[in-house]
Structure formats: structure tokens, C-alpha cells
Length: 343
Ligand SMILES: C[S+](C)CC[C@H](N)C(=O)O
Ligand SMILES: N[C@@H](CCS)C(=O)O
Ligand SMILES: [Zn+2]
Image (cartoon, rainbow, N blue to C red):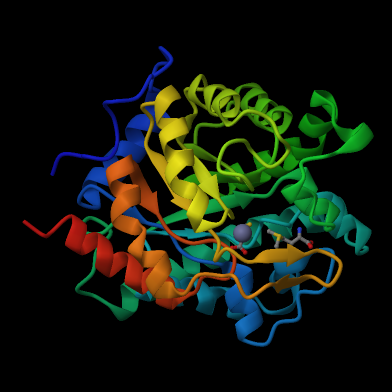
């Protein structure tokens, strides 16, 4: 089936799509014109009893309960996800060192996050011999959360890094982690919840300097439907991603559903790369309490009612972020099957 939602109509910015864009486009085509991402990982870990009130947040479970991470990945694949995102969002060598681990142990824990996701995919395929990745892509995306995530104070929702906000600092912070995760051979690298332009620039330079040949996606977050959370222009951020041939998809995550429509339209103006979106429930994160607050979150039904519009706007990869669950993903998957009825 032709990929209706990816390509065409965008400004393009003159960038070569490159191997990464072509790879993502092939996966999207193999998924029948769209791919379903998973939902909140930390949300589900907590739902199964994990206490994430820790500087490592969900990455704590790589140490304490890898079986739980594997179960949550498996639940998302069962719910229809084509892409599962590893538990490495807040896993950093620096964060593990602060817990007393050596650099090598920290690197091994990063690798383990990818291995757990690979195991979940293998288990699914073993339990469902009728399913094959040739028929339905099931991909592992290694999460790289922003420097603000590592700070564990909600800075990924402000993008205000103070003195640490220099290009070289951010590149040094992320370099080894990116290399280790890439060496673990995920299908994709997911740069998630990118709050500012500088961090996007740091990632682009690292992808080139480290010669990373695994397709990546760049996903920004917004709290006004116009700019990224730091106030930097989304257009400028998306341009940085678009200009990098190693970036296979550009989009938005952990952002309230009500803002997504306008954000997709902005991204579409500057890129022909596939667009991905995985909004949160619309609730607000209280970083001090490490809790989601306000009862303004949308229900699964409301969330899913947006999906058709997001497809028409041009999103090719759709899932959920914090406070979404396998039920959300099941509903998105069903809704997309309606949007792209089987031939
Ligand atoms: C995407 S946020 C909810 C992740 C957690 C945050 N970095 C913290 O540690 O509080
Ligand atoms: N990928 C992470 C959150 C990103 S905001 C998770 O799902 O827990
Ligand atoms: Zn999130």
C-alpha cells in the first residue's frame, strides 16, 4: 500500500532522505501505511508495583526487575505495537555511576535494556508461531532521554539547562551512551522528549562523529502546540533533524493530545521524513513528587478519537507516551486498522 501519510506535501528543506528515512519508510510500508508505537513504559511498570521514585526513574527496573520490563514490552506487542521502546530513557552511565556502579557496569546495564526488548520480541514470536516480522514489523527502539531526564527534576519539560547548556557539554554527556546503545543493535535509536534546539544539534553531531548507522528518530515535546518546551522554535528544531540523513523520522512525544494537530502541521512544513507522534495523556508531571497530577487527562476513547485526524495531518507512526497503557495502544491499533482497512 502506498504510504499516504509519509512523504509529499512537506517543505522538505532540500535534505537527502538518506538510508535512515528510507528504512523507516520501508517499515511503514510493511506495516500497511502506518506503524503503532508502544505506550508509557514507566506508567506500566508502576501499574505493576514498581516504585520509580528514584533518580533513575524507569531505568531502576533494569537493575531491580528486568522481568517486569520484559512483561511490559510483551504486553505492548500483544496490544498491537510495532515498535517497543527500551527502558533506557533515564539510563545513563553517569546515573549508574552515581549509584556506585563502574563505568563498565553502567555500559552493561545500557546494553541489557536492549537485550530485554529483544527477548520480549523473541518470546512473542515463539508464543505466536503464526506471526512473523515479515508480516508485521516488530522493532526495538533504544531510548535516549534528554540530559534533562537524567537531572531527574523534570527539566525535560523546561529545557533550561543553565550552565550545562553548551553544545560540547551535551555531546560529552551523551557520546558513550549513544555508542553503547548502538552497539547493542536495536533497530532504531529513539531520541525522546527533546526539549531544546541545542540538544537536537548535539545529537546530530554525535550521530555523524560516532558514525552511527542505525536509523534514529528525533521526538520533541511541547506545552503550547507551537514551540518546543524551552520556547525554541519547533520549525528550527525540525529543520535540524531534517538536515541529518541519519534521522529517519521526526515528531512529538510526551505532549498533551490537544496540541498534536498543529505540531504535526508545523513539522510537515519542513520535512518529508515520516512523522511520528506519541502524546501523553494530557496530565502534568510533578517532578518533586514524581507523580502525574490533575485530572485533565484524556480517556483512552478521547485519545483515540484524535487518531484519524493525526493520520490525515500526516503522522505515519502513532503511539502513546506517559500515562498511556496497553489499552490505549490496543485502541490505536484498532483505529488505524479502520483508517487503513486491510486490502
Ligand atoms: C518523562 S518524565 C515523567 C521522567 C521522569 C523525570 N525525568 C524524573 O526523574 O522525575
Ligand atoms: N519512554 C519513556 C518516557 C518518555 S517521556 C517511557 O515510556 O517511560
Ligand atoms: Zn513521556
